[in-house]
Image: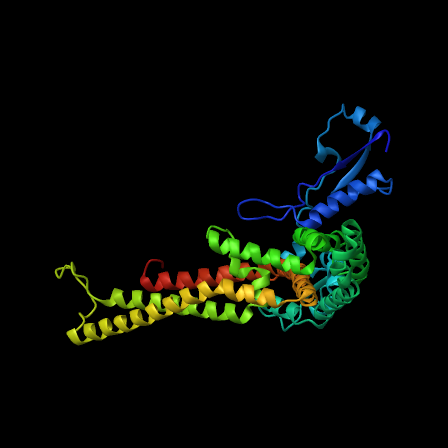
Length: 420
């Protein structure tokens, strides 16, 4: 817009990691959608806490101070605290009402959590079945409305997938990369947005995450068809196995999990058995007396008899023999992995390869959906648990507990003769 400037304050749009923070697809989607709406003159009003359109005249009045927070302030609102609720208990109706959008989106009826507080208008209390804070999570997880809302989201996703999955494998013939991206993103948003469980940015972020993760596979599909994609996966797995320095475990590759599930289970069982034997041997060896033990040192434990020592040594020998066999079997299995993988991939025809790709991509997309659903449900639980932390224990109860403890302490001191 001529004569105006768009300020976007997106410093809270990130996922907090352990070593560093990350921009997730929904964050990128939210930022880019605001900018694109502004460019196309579709952004008619400010977005509180994210974006503000500022005229050049206002910038001049502010002496051209371009501090973003001056115009688009995204500071979180202070946590509300109700003095009456802290004194007498209960959750203010106003605080629950402020979170009604979250309740509605998750399909949770507030009556399933709260009941009006007796003789205290304008306040709620937890239903009798919620006796401890942990009950909140269990109640939300089993709530009929929450489960139904998430099921509606999954049903909408499955319907969308069935309607558009063949467009993915058709990419090998029509080569319409940009057209497929537009089709998937637009149709996904239209299919899942009406459910109302996630925000527009989150719905857009889900499909954006899927496209970003699979973009190289789609490009390979254009260049080499479905069988070529599977061949490319095989090559990357074998290369990682031979390199031995890959940060990701090649055995955890999506192709291995779907094509060699039985073989992988056997491999994992052998590895687990070896780990168990290693632990058993180490635990037994610790029990044996050391050659340099100082007999003069005090030791509460009874010294082992020669018979007990011999028994432990025998068990160690037995476990080491088992470990040798398991290690050998594990090595043979690992060596045979590449042959098994090649055999399974070579057996695939074009149609089987296309079907396998769609199965894998469906699972990848479903995992993204489930991750978003779990995050939203957790946000709901944390919100309700916060009211428990703030208001469940009243000041009156704290003072009563303090007085009871003080009386008990005074009585104890009196009995000891310290006070008269």
